[in-house]
Image (cartoon, rainbow, N blue to C red; front, side):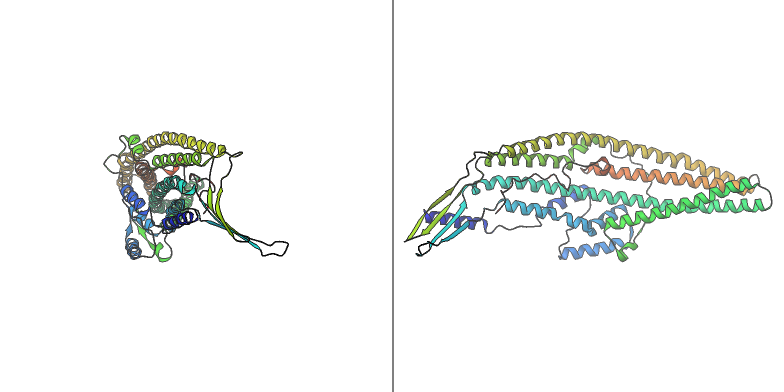
Length: 471
């Protein structure tokens, strides 16, 4: 009996002693999913030659005028928050390895001193978990489901981050363009104010007219100051998201937003496509799987969570050796609470899955309407209002040359033309931000503006029953 127990113990050590944690496990799958959905490359910085290549690529990107895709790629290469995020994979892999390990044998020793002064008695015992080996496959199934959930969670977070960078880029690009237009407005109105001031000195206009002209000029200066602050703030937001500092923050971009493309946006069948490619739904499904595995584990271990078997030796006049068996009696706690909790979590995960599908459909329709609405408004400015203002300014210039209108009216028309350009840029910004959300939902993620998701980075992990991983 003793030899058999010792042999079993050595066999368990041989089976589990070589287990190790590969902290990189899962990252290739995440990288492939991100590249397929976002056409960008992610790098986990671990001090290898590949990291040096990524650093060289980062320097090359920062030396050119950045596009939205360049900004996203820089963030994927440089942002430290993403590097910290990838450790979620290592944590989940460590849990998976831990779930496959057997409990360590427990050695008990006691020395008893007889009051008569005789030789002390020595007691030795070693026990191992008998049922622990049977529960290992169940624990590994739970941990494996959690590991798959972690990969989906990290992939989704990376896609969210890429969309955030792209949207911030378009906002900054619009702010730079708006700043340029606000400067032009101030120049036009300042010139108009100078004309009004000279006319007032010649007593050709009243004090009231002069004050009205000055109000418009000073208001435009205030708007210019706001535009300057907005451009600086959006630049710093982009710096933070891209993870750059020092000389790296001296990057440049094309100061003008792209025009609305002639090709229609991909909105046909958007609900079906969003559901089919949804990582959020896949994550929710995996939470159901993990919760179901946990319920199965709870039911299997509810009555007898552990049984220990081993050897005990005692020395009195001579050595005595015999087997030891330890089995908990399920008189009070029969696992009802654990099973009920697991079943409740499973039902919650199922209901959240269906609620998420409804939210994805609604978000897809809302994004489609935003894109189409912003597209129509931007084109209306581009094709109708801006040409009208240009025509007004050109006709005014001809009449000014013919001395039919004054310089004051010509400058006013020019200021109104610039204000229409400001409105056009704002519509372009809304369009490209909406297109970012459209690309996000077609890549499998709900746009962040549509609220929190089930099973975010801060929680949603299916629990492992307490004590099952205590080795």
